Length: 151
Image (cartoon, rainbow, N blue to C red; front, side):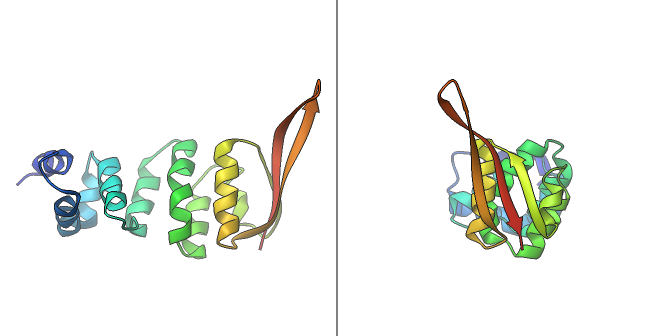
């Protein structure tokens, strides 16, 4: 079979999640690297309760240009990764995310995604001393930035 035929199979509703996972594992990283259905393959791992292998994550990061897309992708994977792998992935991002790997104090502007990322990193003890700052304008409080310390 050719790659596009495998891609169609992986998108088919005729196969179970388990059958798709068997195909993905047999095809391996080379297929993933050349595939047009990386998102689908990532979802197959998740649908089967499996972690996305680090070599797949690295490849996804290399091919994805948007920092925000990478951050969204990284958040649910943080708990499955070694600290060294997290550092490698953060270093593949633009600033200010790249500097998170440096020991010391840091800050990010507040967004739901940034808060989720920081909470995920705190949960695995990659960072500590997280504080979310608020500002008040006309009596309405809003979150403005997140400060934290990388160990």
